[in-house]
Image (cartoon, rainbow, N blue to C red; front, side, top):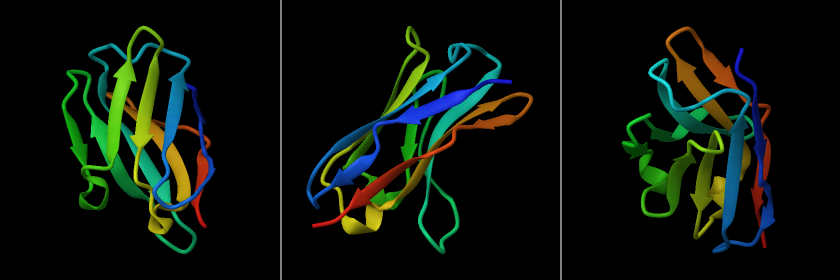
Length: 117
């Protein structure tokens, strides 16, 4: 089973930036992976997919973060990133990374992002 560890969360003022990292215990450069994603879950809300990147590097974003968030990966470090700029209070949530393999979806434990003045 692939173990994922997120980091980089914290509290930031509106308009600020954070970069989340998700490091995998296994390689993320393999045909056994379909995609890698960042999700977020706010209190009382359903978990939603925020950004997706494929092994080939194709990306997709939910509309509310387009132009502000960027997902990337460093296969030499087995790490997935989420650069978040121009953060808004509505971005406040627990952020999770997920790696979808041909066998299962592996989840990290989450990292909290709070956007508040």
